[in-house]
Length: 394
Ligand code: FES
Ligand SMILES: [Fe+2]
Image 1 (cartoon, rainbow, N blue to C red):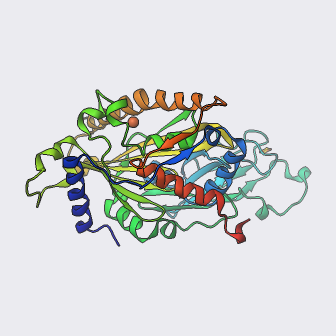
Image 2: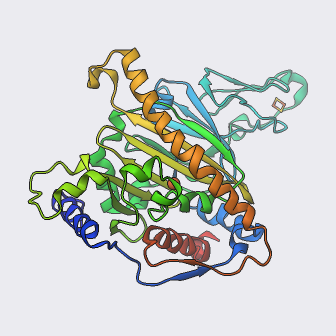
Image 3: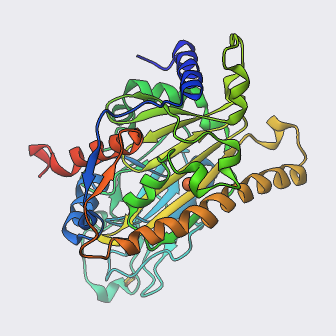
């Protein structure tokens, strides 16, 4: 089933029912968990390899490397990567390591480069990854240079995003990974027409699952954010569509209350709800009436206690909005500040504290409630990936 307008309407009506009755979509049971899941290096190594080494996840928005030879670098769980726009408009990704003796080729987080030149002995590589120059090659010795280009990593641009699998031995197919429902939803958002305003990376001393869980959680809103999000959003109210791996859900603004018991036909739901997509294995996409936000989480290698969170806001261009550059900048800076005041100032300390609490050897079994539906489904997919690696991929 695709997310047609009928389905959106149904979710809106379901949400109105939840608000009226104090209910929410539920998982149907409580599930236990243990602190060791957030501090076990063996489990972290499995997540690194069987999750991030096997399936596509987002590493950026295409507008962040809009022009040929523009690149960005990313510390992914298995590899340090360079992603670079090609002359023909395509994208390629490489391991950020010189093939001579392995020096880090690029140190910048982003930039534009016609030739990657290694700081150690000045070998150089084309943006397509080919080895161009071997310095003092009359004494270095002969070898097949075509075999010693940069190691390529699978990358694909789809729905405006740059997706990678962090494993040189895999092929990427984002459409298949998303499945027909989520692929159609993302196509409908036309994120490729937006520009990434303020991509930002946060190093967090917190397990990536605690981070991801925190942003799938609609149960904490009024308790952890009483003066910010809790004032405008409903707590513990989800209307969710499960696509088996990814899922889509509505969260409600309090402004929805005026439609309780009223005829809501023709109402523009976007003004009263936030559409959220969980893009397995590690991202939350939030679709607002005016823009899109993306939060991604990934571990640092096999370290269970540290993660990287990327946060970006994607907005219509100045041309589309009709705003002057200054006005446009100001408008989105304001939106960004609101995000930061909630996520950075209120969520981060709680989530960091959770990681600290997980150090306790006798923390006791924890519980995930039936109402915490999104978290159950995240866990379901993660368990599947960590446990079931297809036989041909071992
Ligand atoms: S390590 Fe790069 S040129 Fe030697
Ligand atoms: Fe929060």
